[in-house]
Image (cartoon, rainbow, N blue to C red; front, side, top):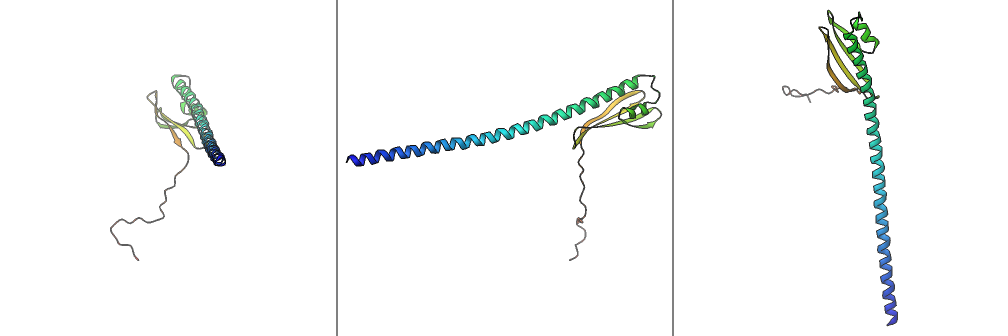
Length: 155
């Protein structure tokens, strides 16, 4: 009878050891999953921060060039505002008389840029557009004919 109780006690110790090993293993696996998730979140946050930093750096440059253009319009000593705008990085187009249209594309990164458009009408410069544009191109695929519903396709 003493031997039976010894076996029972040994079996109880073995199963509790297995449960503890399983719990430690499960906690370790969850910790590894958490570590990988945190690492991915950190990479994503860093990429997002770099993207914002590049945007705001390009925004500062575009705003400074726009301020130079405002100052040039206000300054009466500049004879040809179109040439001056080209010197500071704008594309200038004379729209008649002393009216101009100015366009600036300031690169943010290899995929996007800031587009700033301003018009000079009657001696007053007005920004008409300031937005981020994607430089990747989209090509419309039109090699397949589309059925218009009027004729039946030939078999």
